[in-house]
Structures are given as C-alpha cells and as structure tokens.
Amino acid sequence: MTADHAGAILTVDLNAIAENFALLSGKAGNAVCAAVVKSDAYGLGLSPVGRRLAKEGCRDFFVAQLDEAIALRQALAHMKDGAQNASIYVLNGLVRGAEDDYAAHHAVPVLNSLEEVDAWSAYAARRNVSQPAILQLDTGMSRLGLPGADTEILSSSPDRLAGIDLKYIMSHLACAGSRTHPMNDQQLEAFSASLASLPKAPASLANSSGIFLGTRFHFQMVRPGAAIYGLTPIANESNPLAHTIELSGKILQTRVVDADQAVGYGATHHVARQSRIATVAVGYGDGYFRTLSDRGCGYIGDYCVPVVGRVSMDLTTFDVTDVPEPLSQPGMSISLISEKNPVDQVASRAQTIGYEILTNLGRRYFRSYLGSA
Image 1: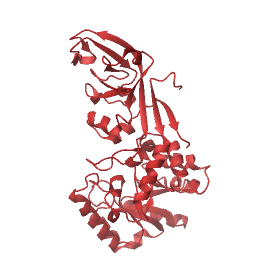
Image 2: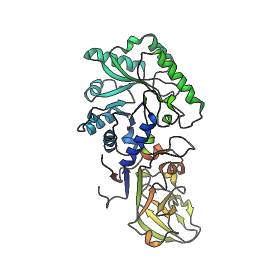
Image 3: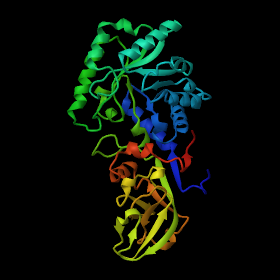
Image 4: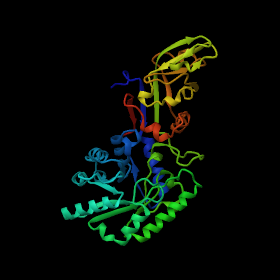
C-alpha cells in the first residue's frame, strides 16, 4: 500500500513512545520497567514498537499469546546489547502440548493455575532442565491466576514448583485507574500476604495506572501497557504522557446539502441550514467506531468539524460548512485523532475506552513511523 492509495494515514510517533517509556521507568524507581506489547503493541505495531523499546533499554516484555512472543522474538533477533535476549512473558499462560515452542523461542509462560504449574514442572523434569516462569495470583480480578484457595494449596506443597525457575510472582490490579478506589489497597494487602506464604521470588503488581499509585505498589517490576501509548493512567487527572499517534482521513467528495436534507443511513441527521458535507474514506471497517455517528469530530487546522449522520463501513461524513473551502477540498485530509483530539477524547465520544480505539486501528490505513525502530 502507498500513501496515495490509502483512504487514511496513521502516523505512529516512536519518539513519543520512547519518551513515555522513559517517564514510566523514572517513576518506577528501582523497579524493573517492563513493556506490555500485546495485541500488536496496542494496535501500533509489535515489531517497530518492540524494537524501539528495546533500543531504549527495555529488556522485559509481556504479550498475551505464544504466537505474539514468537513474532517479537523474531523482531528482536538481530539486535545487539542484550536486546536479542530480552525476556518475553506470555500472559495467557501455558498452551498444553506447545511446551517445546516456549522453550525453543525462549518464551516464558505466566502460570495461571495449579494445572499449569504441574504441567510446566513435569516438562522441566522430562527435559531435566529448569524452566523459567512467572506465577500469577488472583487477588480480586477473578480472571486469570491462582485464587486464594489454590495459593494456599501451593503454599503448603511448594515442591509442586520443582524444576520451575520462578522469575516473578505477579498479580493484576482491577481498579488502579481510580486513585481512591478501596480495592487497590485490598489487593495490595492480599498480594503481600500471599507472597509471605510462597517461595521467595521477585514480585510485580503495578500496571500502567498502578505505577502512579506510589512505591508501595511497585515491588520489583512494573508492567505498563496503555501508558506507553499515551493513554491517561488515572481518571480525572491530567495526562503526563505524550500523544503517540495521528490519524488523518482523506476527503473524497464535498457537496452542498439544503436545509432539512438527510445525511447518511437511516436519515438520522437532518442539516439545520444549507451545509457543506465532506465524505471521508474512513468507516467502521477501518476501526472508526459506528458509535461516533453524530457524536464524533475531526479537525481541519483549528476548525473542529462534527461527524454528521451514521458512520458507515467505508465512509464518514463531516460538516465542513464553517471551514474555508480552499481548506476542505477533495484530496485534502481531516484529522480524526490528534493532539487536539486525543485517543481518550475520541473514546469518550465513542462511549468506549482508549484501549479499544487503539487496538481497532484498521489495516487499510497507510502506516508511517516517526523515529527509528
């Protein structure tokens, strides 16, 4: 794909991503700062983002799935200064029957159940080689990890960890984005109590938001994800992180629409005055959410232009009546996500979260990267 052929251009600022990682590493103090790059580095590109973070000194990465770990290992393979040997942890755990693939690609499973603990220990015994892993405890998410009862079982029979090189014991905060939520301290207390009962190992609790809750939550490793990509870590507080992407959609056509004429599917929008409508080559097929219908906006320079009518699969219509015509001609662009209209703001208008906006960025966009990977 070329920029000329694409309906929209997505620009990813690797320098801003590096700046955010440096800020987070600084806040982590003496704790290791890992990077969560699951879901194609939150939609921004696993290989270029992973390589740039490794270039910035990151040596610990988290992905969700084994195939993501393999792809990241390949992306780092020819780097130097230890980046090629970075630790890659698989959050979704151990895929039974694929143990050899973890070992071959030096992918470290996060063990989320006693069954996974037993399977990984048995694999270590078969190979007669200690195998690295992270043990995850469930301290309130009720998602992945050993629940309290299973943690007690493991505490009373630590030999089940035979052959496992326990790199970290981790848990995951459920409400860290809300600074005063009581569950933060409840999970911290539960995690600390469980650590005291298990074999000694470094610990990790803080996600992006958890880093901003203070050093009590940092332990020996923090695991930022969304914050690396510029999303606001704490609700209702200013965002200290740099904006990392810009999405610009190409205007295909403009037309004058008379007062009270309908625009788009379902005739959900009728213009109140004679208006100029610009049709842009972006729709929900590109990850521009249908919930932005009659709610979203874009920018042409300093002019805010609202979405009018429904977002369709390949097209979205904007009211550009108040924009000088020379600035809103076919072939020109409307900025859909930018520093003026950041991801979190777009997400709010779409009635979702910034994570979902990023991870749905479309494959039909021409992608441009600022800064070296």
